[in-house]
Length: 134
Image (tube, rainbow, N blue to C red; front, side, top):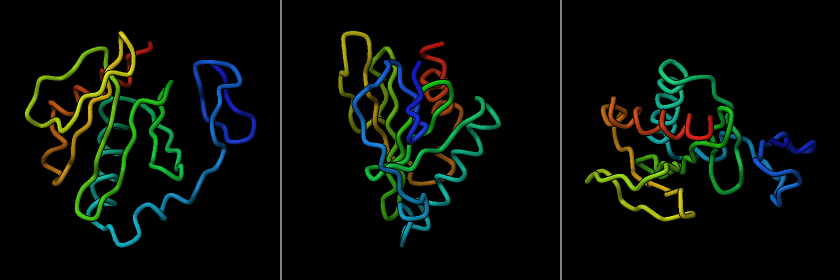
């Protein structure tokens, strides 16, 4: 584990190439109140049911960290897109995309449109991602 001394992001490898640029979290949610509501609700549920998180606001999206970077959130006008890695491709109609990252890792992507979609199935998948590198 390596923490960048400039931006405090945590990486698996020392001196991993990255951008240290951060932006204020609220910039991601300008004119996106539904996405902000969903992000706040998701973050609260993850904190209550899975574990402690740290929010890192990058120019591209918002990352959630536990021990590792386990979820990226991309606020959209009326929804929240989330991306998380697992050691398998999920087989669910909820997924909009699954992309192999390596031989042992798949990025699974889905949209959250309503708070009710932050259910036990989704929290189970996110918990797997949170604990993947434990």
